[in-house]
Length: 344
Image (tube, rainbow, N blue to C red; front, side):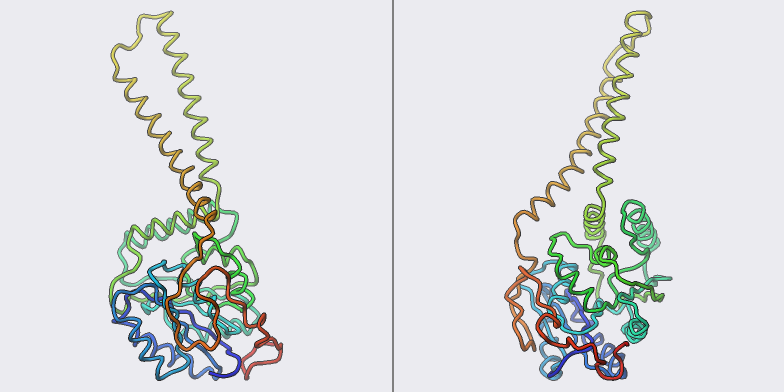
């Protein structure tokens, strides 16, 4: 594909062989009518099925289909980051391959971008096909995160969004290991707005975010955007120390002035277990932050690329540095409209 690209669509994939062809068809059906050039940047996050083979077959027939093939599984948020690194469009859309987020909304997001917004994020007003537990925990997580951080992260949103190139470049310049993309977008600022939609059931396959990964993502979000757990640990430690000191005074008073001193070890064992449990919990909180500091200090690349498909230039073998933006490379730097759709 020659010439500047107006839109890049980043699609992270992990074992999506059952859905990827449908995803491609729905994306092209939704994007062809906009009358702008676009590319589909699929990121294969170490899939163990035929996902990569299917994308290669599609890419052999359609040069707009590109693929970044990881050397192993690095995780969803890293895959999204790689897609942004390798994208070259003036605007960049993020969407998962499972079709829970409708590709048909991307043209509406582009319309919002033309109105002057830099970030248009999808906000779910309903979630089909999910259990009450999943919906309840997701709602609690977003509201807890909002209360704990100084950054206003919109509730009921995922990574489904469209961003201006300058926002994408800002995110690509952040090379932190523990990534929470939607929080990073909120931290970056710029002019943002929501586009409400109903999230559909997964088209095929199984969820790539079981409870274990959701907990991990939650920890990444909280520790990346808040130090309140550390402050809470200090307050709780001080409070428990104060309670222990008061109890000590009570015991001394009972021993000297009364005959009601408690006999036996039951109360001491209970108190010891309580205090030791809290101590271990506080050490766990500290360890979480220290562990993340250790990961950052190693300065390893975010990802390693085994192969690429349909890329004309070479952004590098791995994720050590962000890929230079299209503007930085002298591509698509003009402020003049690209086709009929560029916003004024």
